[in-house]
Length: 304
Figure (cartoon, rainbow, N blue to C red):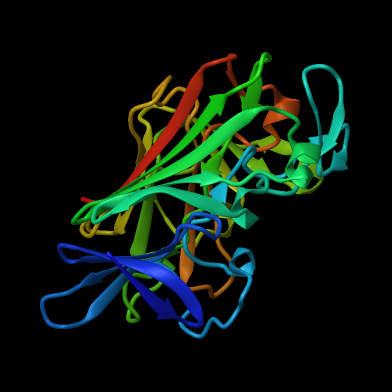
């Protein structure tokens, strides 16, 4: 592990086997890029980061793996966006995807295989999320995989709701001579929904499984009640598979949700693992952490 400068950003670099990981542990605990160093000297990006980026504010960049906490997606309270209600009836503001992606973190430990950081809490965060807690993120880097653990510890005397997640920007198409139609998505879910403006979530007919990625209906599509806690992107022949799965933690697979998203002609496709569908407080799909307890949501991304 070494400290390097990349696109005017000071970050740390890990070389593990053929993989190189670039991350800013103190800025949103954000992984910026993961790429493979191929045998012929070429490089294949797994996690996308824009090559020409000069943005100082990492939270504005479409790339890397932003961490979503305490709630993934946008909250709506009785139709009013960016608000939610606590269990005692208090109405509180809440930014889209929460506030951890913009937060500062302190390093607890760091070595050749990864790092652990703790979020630095501010008075503004208390306005959004009025609880006593510790939120930590743990990264573990492997030859052809990485694990990211979100850990919430309840330091107070009342249960704490949360429904976090990750927003990976995967480099798709894999190569410049391919298109989205050359890649397939495989998620075995019992329910498929569409995330719409105004906080509405509409049920929809089950999509083909697998299906190709160029389908515009995959934008803001929600896959819920999974038969297996995993989703995969691969070439149409099944090769070069990228798998996103939940491992460890409580209630494995019972609430894992995938949200898919991209933009027209973008060099990325987002297969986002969340703890539940969006607007979790209003839809009653949050997970509760009891006083003096901890809860963990661990995601592994690997190249099968």
